[in-house]
Image: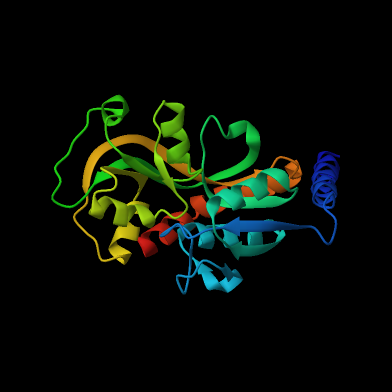
Length: 251
């Protein structure tokens, strides 16, 4: 009798799981957007447009594996600028954006799957410039360059600073070297990676002011079933060592 009850319970759970997965239409897919944000997501040819296999990076590899394991279809496109991708994901159902920094201000705007990776926020000075600041209040006296609608820029603005925002984070490297800005507010290790691509090394960290986590941000109308399946897939991949493996491959 007990065996029969257990068998019935297991069958019921299996049917419930199938029913839950069946909530998504057969043609359901997520429209994934990303940008050049190396080493987390980037075009193989370094251009500002790419699709599917033309995109690599730590987060791109993890997200692909997540969707495959969760059994959810998707399209993946890398475009520019970030500001446009961010607004598209806010406005359009079943759109997703990565790598998106999770912040308390952004939390109610999206549904979240992650973390995909961890980063730090820094103020960088030009090579040879030993400028150091104690905190953001101290940094307000300097010209600061940032990336428009990036989480770092949004944070600075929330703290009363007025960064000089660029549409491409790479623009800040030239501004820093030419003296148009004193400090570059960016994400570590992204900033150093971008600078290295431009032949620039030896940037000085004037301040490290935040630790952050990168997520997949999904439009608020995304079914909870999708979010749950993706999060479960990511948790399994992390437990199996896949996330660490991808991270170590790029850094």
